[in-house]
Structure formats: structure tokens, C-alpha cells
Length: 531
Length: 87
Image 1 (cartoon, rainbow over the protein chains, first blue to last red):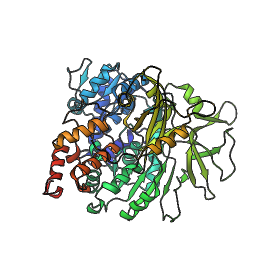
Image 2 (image 1 turned 30 degrees about the vertical axis):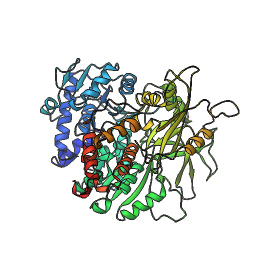
Image 3 (image 1 turned 120 degrees about the vertical axis):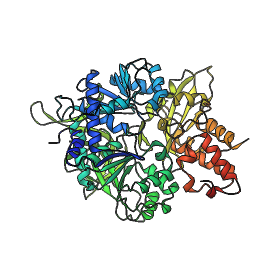
Image 4 (image 1 turned 45 degrees about the vertical axis):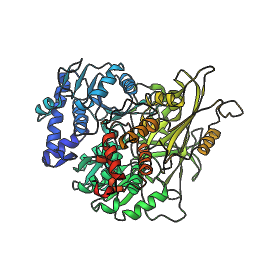
């Protein structure tokens, strides 16, 4: 019976051992290789003292070691925590401290970044993936782990409601927060996805998103449940559209899942007319709304592909999706679709009362795919969960998405906006409060206001203005460097201005609407700038 | 200024807020050093320097991986032979 996420690969390994599970350029692992090596890694982690439910960090660039690390950690009864390999060292050390990670899976190619994270104060007891004897803490290389492949995982009691992984995302107070998923929530999502998209063993999925971005959960878990292969798209290829499209064509990818920005890049710079993408049947996108002019052009460029809008915060996984049909000429947006059959939604007003049909309200979701809660943050849990009593001390627990939606007469959900200051940049969640907190942490900065402005590439970027402390002096460039050292790349303001004063509301707060208008007016987003 | 220096100056000044610790063989694409929007700005800048469009088929990992690769690619782009012969 499949009741734990690693059972997905074990099951295929038993019935069709040589079937390709994962590929990275010209290297691949079959299901039996992935399963037995993950068993070996799990034994190694248990020998190192990894406990049940313990969070174990994955600090790796996209590679074949990533799925190995995920499954090995889960087979040890522990929970994997993807760490953004491109985040500033201080931020990564902060996530390590917050999650209580003592053990890391990394690689020799990460050595420079790993040293910086350790220097930034990460308290690590041991590392897998770094040659033994080269770190101040005990370590073991990947070659040794792979040589220790085993037919069975360690004996450990693990049930489906146990913690399987923690995904960190932007937090509004300036501190990232950990979203806890169980084997049950991950598997429930995989089952939904396989059924909705009709995935099978002849499919080849592509993993475009890095592991710390929850889109990758679809590629790995739904792919394994379908017995399909998953092609990992190297970070380099993911950023360079003509190489990305060449890889999709060469590897005959049938299903891709990416943020709209990546697909728009493919459209404009992917040399699509020279690529044979005849194998591709699904292009699923999510993370943020797809601008319709670009979506229309993409549908025209790839008429044989079905385009699909998947919606769901990292807290719930995907819970609605909409397969794009013909688009009316006057249509300005597409719905996020119908709710999964195994989910319940409430659309409520500010007092948690249901809004009238067709009215806009906040979407509250209850589903099997939902998170357990935020790691060690009962305060966030209290704010994020809505409890509907069902008698006695029991309650149905809904997640407050913060997304404003409207449900039409056909039961179709439409995304309207956000209730708070969370924004999306390239599909990544960014809390503008976190950006402002990072800027204000510079000693010369008195206060900062951050907003989003169009980036000139059919998406948006962050712009900020700030006021310096009396008597302080600093250049915008110096503060931008400070921000780059604290925030992930997608949250760093693309435009930063120092002002003598910021626009104010009548109550004296920063008037962010006025600020946005000013910054937009001042910005013809630089498509070309003389050096 | 040679093509590599021109690329380096643009990346350091415009994309990295003046942080000049980057080396010519640091992978710009992998470590989140230059984001996807930064890449587009870089493409526009190179088109301006070369006075010609970069064909989509040239927007590849091999040409854009690091400052060394970008420098040689820009030199080829500026060459009379045109980018179609460059690789």
C-alpha cells in the first residue's frame, strides 16, 4: 500500500525497476537505482543519529542528488527542508537556525556557498555530500553514499500524518516561515494531479522550479506516482530560453509546469519555431496570473499543447485548475478553475461570514493536500487557520489564503487580488513588509516604502524609496548591496531611490499608492542603459 | 574598451549594484547572481553595443554562462561574419 511518499518510487522500482525515474542532462537514475540509493542514504542518516521527524536540510543546486536527498531523508523518517542555493548566506543560516536543522545534504560544488553559510553562524553537526575530512564537521561524500545502496530502508515507524517536508517562504515580519507538509498532504496532491492531468508512465515531466519553490512538488511526486520520468532542468537552462526549449525538444518532454514568466520567455526568446515540441501535451502554469496577450500568442505558437492554470498557495498545494479553452477577444483574465473534488472552500468577508454568490471575498480552503501548520509558529497558525466547530472539541480546519476571489454561476473561481501586501515576482511570494524591513535594517535608513511596478517584461518587479536618518549619508547603491545580502534575488528592489521625504497619507503613514504612482512615472523600466 | 571589459562593467555597475567581487568565470546563471530580468537587460545592452539583434538561437547557456563566454560571444556578434557563424 502506498501511504508514504517514498513508496511512490519503491512501488515503480518493484514492478518496473529499470524505468527511468529522473534525468539531469545525459545522466539518469532508474527507479530501482533511486530507490536503493535512497535506502542507503537513509541508513547513513540513521547511523549519524537522525531522528524521526527531524528537519534535514537540502542545500544543493538542481542535480540528480536532489531527488536522492529528498527520498533518503524521508526514508529515514525525517523531514526534508529545501534551502535556496542562491539565497544570501545570512538568510540561509537564519532558515537553518529557525528550522533547527543540524544536518545538511550538500555537494562539493556547493563548497564555497556552504563555507559562507557556516561562517554566517549555521550550527551544523554533520554534512552528507562533501568529501570526508575536508570540513570542520564530520562529512561523507556522495560516492560513498551511493556505494552503500540497500534493498530496504531502515526500519522506522512512519505514518502518513508524519511530517515529510518543510518549505520556507517569505514572512511578513522579515523572517521566513516554514510550511509543514505531511506524507498525506504530499500524496494527496500527487493523486489529484495524476488524475486531473491523466499522467502516465509514458509521460516525461520537467522540473523547472528549484526545490525550495513548491511547484517542484508536482514534478517529483506526481511524476513518480504516474511512473513517469522527470527531467530536471539545470538552473542555467531555466534562465536561458533557447537552451530551455532545446532541452524540452531533445528530451521529448510531455508535461511542463512553470511560472508564466518562464513561458513568456520561451515565447519571446525560445526560438520555438526551430524546436520540435511535438511531444509536449500539457503546459501547466501557476504562481501568478498569466497576462492574456502573451498567453494568446503562446497558444498560437504551440497549437497542439493544452494550457492549464493551476492555483494553490504552498500551504494547500494545488486545489483548483483551469484548462484554457478558446479565449474571447474582449477577455481580460482567465479563471483559476474549479475546486478539487476532495476540497471545500468558503468565500468570506472581513467578519468570516460567507459573501453573497458572485461577490468578492477571501478564499478559505480545507483539503487533504493542506499543510499541518507553520513550523514552530503557533502565532502564525492561529492567524492562518479558521476553525469551524463540528461538535465537542472538534473543528473543520480551513486555511485562510489571503487571496480575494469571486465564484461565478458555473462554480468557477476567479482570482481578484490580495487582502494583504503579499505580491508575486516571477511566481515567488514576496511580502513587501519583509522588503521594507530588510531595507530599514541598514543603519542609515530611517524608513522605507516598497511597492511593485511593471517590469516591462509582462511581469512585475519591486521598487522602493527610502528616507535616511537625520545626518546619515549613504548611496542608493550601497543600500541595494545591503538588500542583496539579506533578501532572495526576486525580492531585491530593481529600483531604489533615496528621497528627502516620502508621500504621506492624512494619518502620516507612507502613502504607498502615491509612492507607486511616482515610482512608475519615474521609471521607464530600463530595457537599455548605456554602461 | 574590449568586449569583455564592457560586459563586466555593465554587470557590476547595473546588475550587481557595484559589487565587483565577481570573477570572469563565476557562473552568472546558476547562483542567482544575475536574475532573469537582469539577463534581459544584459541582452538589450549587448544589442546596443553590437548594433544588431541577438538571434533567439544564440541566447544559450554556452554564450551566457559567465563573463568570459559573454565577452567572446559579444566579440563574435560585433564581427562582420555575424552571429550565425559563431556557434
